[in-house]
Amino acid sequence: MLAVLLSLTASVAWGLADFCGGLFSRRWPAMSVLLIVEAGGLIAAGTIVLAARDPFPDLEHTLYAVLAGLAGVSALALFYTALSIGTMSIVAPLSATGATVPVVVGVAGGDRLTALIVVGLVLAMAGVMLAGREAEADGAASAADRAHTRRVILLSLGAALGFGTFFVFYDTAADASLGWAILLSRVPAIPVVALIVWRRGLPVPRGTDLLRLIGVAQLDCVATSLYAVAITRGALSVVAVVGSLYPVATVVLARVVLRERLRRVQAAGVVIALLGVALISLGSA
Image 1 (tube, one colour):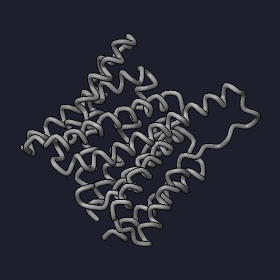
Image 2 (cartoon, rainbow, N blue to C red):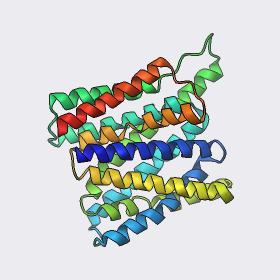
Image 3 (cartoon, rainbow, N blue to C red):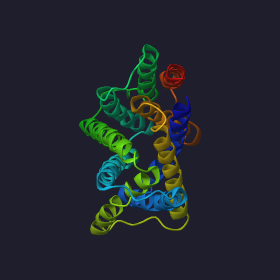
């Protein structure tokens, strides 16, 4: 039950952080936003390491943390790019399908899935997808519109694969130290992103936007920390799917802040997703 609660809280925080990151990606280049988010997260990550006082992990766990970080930053790059050109209510749910990656790995590793949990997982994933559905545009779409839609979908699915891979590597890295896993998963990605920003001559957020993005980075890091604790308290296949419910928060925020239209099918998706979470909680208690 605690693992589900922690991962659910992480999903809400992720949803808020992703929503804010998506907004900034529409005002600044996605890679520049990603650079600030990754670098800003070092503040919270470093604080966690200092507070925990865990010894530096061995080479194997360090490698897994680095691989998790590279997968995660690649996913975020694709995700922010998709958010900058697409509709949040479509991009966010599609990116959550990456939860199938750790589910497959978890089951292959021997995680036990009861019938109640299976039903909950199915409902949760169905709810996520329904929450992101959007009415088809009236009339025939132009070739440019279809190409644009395909690009958004491919970017979102690429992000999903990256997020799922991150979950798998991060689970192993966190076995040695949660704090070091969080920190080491961010450090290697920063120079790579910084180099891309520099080579492309991209403008970097400054002033109020910079400070707000640093705040978003802290929120994202807190969400990752909560998820890290959750995976030490429950089955990876369950925790990962509950954590993937962050699109529900993103869709709700898009409705309240951006006044995006929430169709009945989307509202039904939110309810179904929450029901799935409840069943997962009951089945894992």
